[in-house]
Length: 255
Ligand SMILES: NC(=O)c1ccc[n+]([C@@H]2O[C@H](COP(=O)([O-])OP(=O)(O)OC[C@H]3O[C@@H](n4cnc5c(N)ncnc54)[C@H](O)[C@@H]3O)[C@@H](O)[C@H]2O)c1
Image 1 (cartoon, helix red, strand yellow):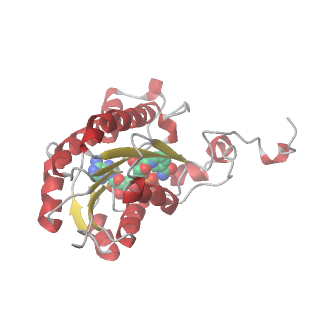
Image 2: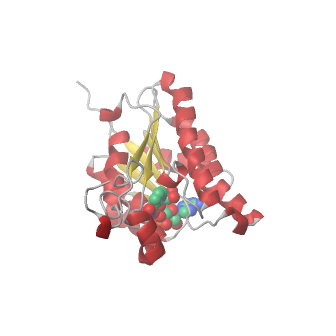
């Protein structure tokens, strides 16, 4: 029997955080990976993890075409696209000016549609995999980060929508919705006592997640093992979406 070709992946936002952990996971699983990030740190991360780095802003016009070309030049094929790049730190609607709203919807939502559209023709049929990174804040309401949450809610619907469009061709589209994960994006939040009390304490597991814990689920969704999983948005949130724990001092077990 001929050997299966080595799978190849494009991971956006791969210089650090969840993206870098996804790269590590995919490489550990035997894939070759193109790391894309607007931060020049991407070259160092790629060298450290053993992938190929591309410094590129995914929100720039034509980025998807450039990403596809870079992956085809490096590997000759593209099996997996992980849309992970995103920005955090938006505000409540009343404090959101036009530029902030436009930036969050463009980087965290519209750019994902544009990049995916331009890479989609190159994915194998059957077998192509797309994994998006949504957020628990795009599923449940949480005051204060409106444009971010709306964009991530859009990612969840984009996942279901595109999944239904391309599943007949044998391409699966799924997403993860991380809760609070220990990355640079949440560093300030994780030092803020109000946020800790409002978000981390009510989390049933009572802790933030690690990038590796998110990457493990993305790795599964990108694998052949997930061949019958279509259009799902899987929360990786320590239980935050399914239960709210009372503060520890009230934890008696009684209602
Ligand atoms: N950390 C969390 O708690 C959490 C929770 C829910 C969702 N997420 C999502 O996970 C993804 C990864 O976040 P993270 O926590 O690792 O954050 P992070 O800030 O550590 O990493 C994000 C990476 O994306 C890159 N990036 C941002 N905009 C880009 C652009 N336009 N083009 C190219 N690269 C760009 C950044 O340079 C950075 O390297 C994001 O989509 C984020 O919204 C994170």
